[in-house]
Length: 187
Image 1 (cartoon, rainbow, N blue to C red):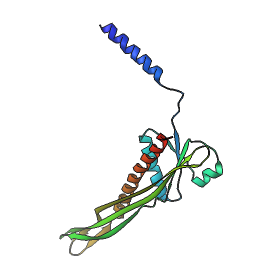
Image 2 (cartoon, helix red, strand yellow):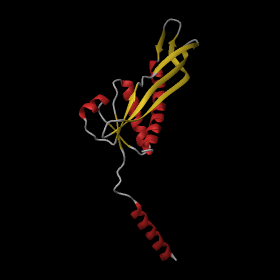
Image 3 (tube, helix red, strand yellow):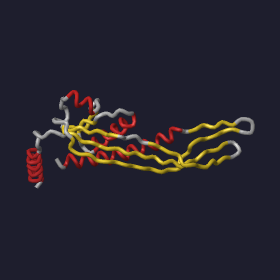
């Protein structure tokens, strides 16, 4: 009985190995750079999200205009993020303090709007576009203070706002990766 199970297992593995198509290559997607730091942040997040979905995504290390000038096709498709300029706006807040310290809490709304463009790698023709918009509202600390009667120091926390828009940018990159993956599945 053991020999029969071993023989069936080997037979199953052999037929499974023959079913693997080694001639098919993975789709390579070059993620183009933008002109602003924010666009590049979203592009980097998009590249990571595409890799998590099993797509061979890499940093193309050039903008769309540079790609048009070079004309070399290194990828099957190129993806560009246009207009990804996240912003965070504070809408008031409240200060809570005690004898030796305090904290300022504010309502922050972060927004991002972008367009994701997918280009054919050979012809550099536009294949698909997807509009993205994300918004997040949160109550976050805007500053902290410490001290006493004679001396009091207050420190603003601008990195909190930056973390808020990075969170929105990551959410937009997830949506963009899903849109790009859908486009590639349809081709």
